[in-house]
Length: 454
Ligand code: 5AD
Ligand code: SF4
Image 1 (cartoon, rainbow, N blue to C red):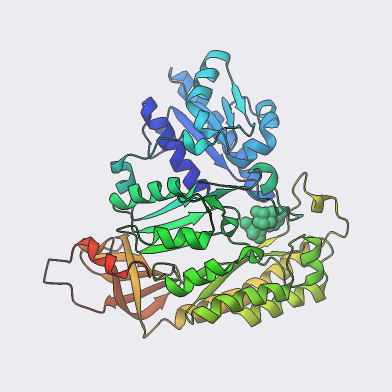
Image 2: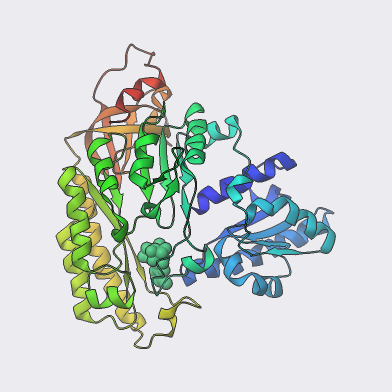
C-alpha cells in the first residue's frame, strides 16, 4: 500500500509543478513514506533522516533548499517525536491526510514546519487527482488500487488499527472509474489492496453493499483488464461471493495471500486472531474445492510472547499440511501501544532466530518444489517489461513467478502461453508456446481480452 500511496502523493503534487526525480540528490522535496509494522522498518526512518540532513546542509551551502517530509505510518505514530528529534524534517503527514501535502508544504514555508496526523473527516480519495495518462503508461501494465483501508480486527501484535485507523471501504463506483482509467491507458492487471481487503463492503452503484467477490465480478468486465488480484485477506472474512469469484471468473488469479500467523490455537487466541488453525484449514479447503490450481501464500510470526516449542511445532505442521507456494515470516517485534507489547514471557532472541530459520527452511523447500513443478509445463504469462538481458522480456505467471522469454517488446501487455524449460533461482525461463501472428508483427494488445471475465 505504501507503493500505491507514494504514487498518489506524486499525483497530488504534480499539478503544483513537481515532477518525480530519479534520485533524491536532484529533488527540491524528499518524502519518506514510512512503515511502522515492525521495529526494523521504523528504525530505518531515523537513519535515512540522518543522511538527508547531510544532503540538506550541503544544498543549503549551495543556496538551494530541500524540503523533507515524513509520511506514512511512522509519521502517524511518532509525528511529535519526529518533529522534536529531527530538525531536518519540514512536514509530517499521516497516511489519511497526504492529500493535504500541497497545503502542508505551503504552511511549512510560512511557519517553518507543519504536522498533520489527524484522521480527517473527509475522504482523501475524493481529493486525490487522478494520475495523468502518460504517468499511468510510464508506471507499467500492472497497478495497485486501494479499495479498503484500516482494520477493526485488533490483533494484539499489530499497529495497523492505530496507524491506518478503522476499516473503511471505498464506494464501488469510484473503484470502477479508477480501474477504467487505468485500463484505458494500458494497465492489464489490477491488484486490489487493503489491510483487510476481503472485509470490503463498499456501496455499489445499485445502492446495495458490495462484497469483494461482487466487486471482482464487475471489474472483470472492464475492457482490457485480464488479471485481478487482491491483498491482504483475513481468514475470517472469506465469504461465499469470494469463493464463487474464484470459481467463475477467469481473470481472478488462483493465487491467494491468506495470512495465518501461527498454527497454534493457544497463540492464535493470544494474538486475538479470531480464528483457529482448523478455521484456517477450512478456509483453504473452500478455495481448493472450487479451483484445483489455486495456490496460497501466507504471513507468519515466530516468537510471539509465550510461544512454546509445541506451539511452534503446530505452525510447522500447518505449513506442511497446507503446502505454500510462497510465504513471509517475521520475528515478533513488540510495537508500542499494542496489547502484546505488555505481555510477559518474551521468547529469547536466540530461540526466535532458530525458529525463524527452521520455518524459512520449510517454506523455501515448498517454494522451490512449487517452482520446479512448473518446468516442462505450459503456463500463461502476462508480459510486463524488457528484462535486463537484451532481447528478453519478463512477465509473471498466475502465481507471480517471474518468467523470461526471448521475444519482441510488442508482447508487453499480453498474456501468452509459455513452455517453461528451466528455473534459475526464483525465475522461470522458457519459450513462447505459440508463434506470434507473423514475423515482426504481433496481435494487438486487446487480444488478451478474450481471457477476460467469466
Ligand atoms: N511483529 C512481527 N510481525 C508483524 N506483523 C505485523 N505486526 C507484526 C509484529 N508486531 C506481520 C504479520 C502481518 C504482516 C504484514 O506483518 O505477519 O501479516
Ligand atoms: Fe493487523 Fe491484519 Fe490483524 Fe488487522 S487483521 S490487526 S491489519 S494483522
